[in-house]
Image 1 (cartoon, one colour):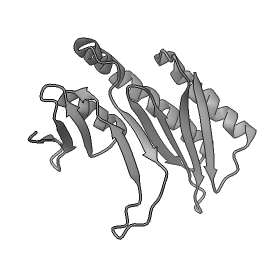
Image 2 (tube, rainbow, N blue to C red; image 1 turned 60 degrees about the vertical axis):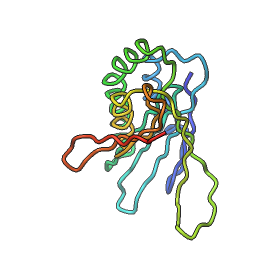
Image 3 (cartoon, helix red, strand yellow; image 1 turned 90 degrees about the horizontal axis):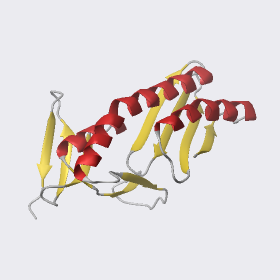
Image 4 (cartoon, rainbow, N blue to C red; image 1 turned 120 degrees about the vertical axis):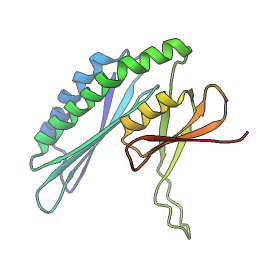
Length: 180
């Protein structure tokens, strides 16, 4: 079951707005067999130029769904984010499930943002802790694309070493493997 953590920046999250977010995101539940509660983190933000940005992050046991959209209307932004998440799920669900069945894996990647900020001379503005799950480079590229990141750290299922896939400037992908 999806639960919601709806937060507003420069906007009051009204009951109507919260209800609309929940209604739109509840449609995603049909794609999953959720045995435990999953929290959807929704951030609503309004800028000075009256544009509205919606960011949604849903950490699932086997992947992290994330989408954001900015338009001139908050409700339209919510609609677009919901549609974007649904497209992501449909695009990757078949591939990810097929790979997990082939490899016997149950979960892929869990992203747990660390909210603590500590002063640093190098100005680190965000920390993340990741659990490296065994996967092949193709699965890592799928996860990287789904998260809309430029790189992804994972444990290579064949070598058991830590590896990184990254998007090159020419649009293709690179792989960095460690010597262990």
